[in-house]
Length: 177
Image 1 (cartoon, rainbow, N blue to C red):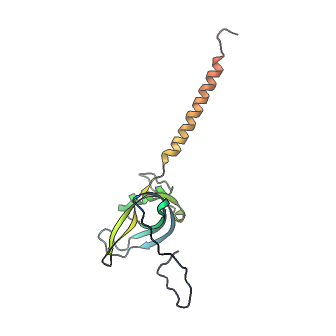
Image 2 (cartoon, helix red, strand yellow):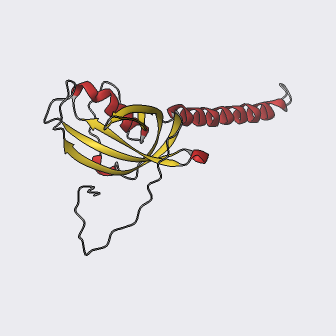
Image 3 (spheres, helix red, strand yellow):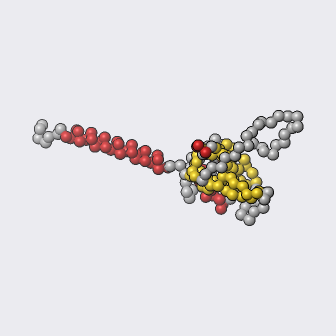
């Protein structure tokens, strides 16, 4: 687990890191979940009550030629946010069925891949206006792709069966026996 609040030792070493930050243009991008921490909200918000459990997800978002960036997303375990939980789990391939109970596999989240619609978030920090990326929506994988492939296979099978039947009956002449 990545603990950013961990203290460093005056006489110890640390891992050097780059400070380069990439701001991606709004759009749909593939992501990989690189970390997940279970946390309890203890902030000051009208929307989120203190004590609300949430998962803080770190995602490496691949912007292609633009570069990559890390986006953190909070998934609150609250009834009013089940739509977002559903979107997230659908995007990473755990397929909840709408209207049915769903028990997510939280242990399989890190390393999962999906697609997200990313937007630019503008905020003020220490009196300075800043920007970062945030997830607008998690994108459901193309469920139709499997159906289309399956239907294409069925169509091919039906066509070859029809061709075979035509070939078999094409040479048949009534009364030839």
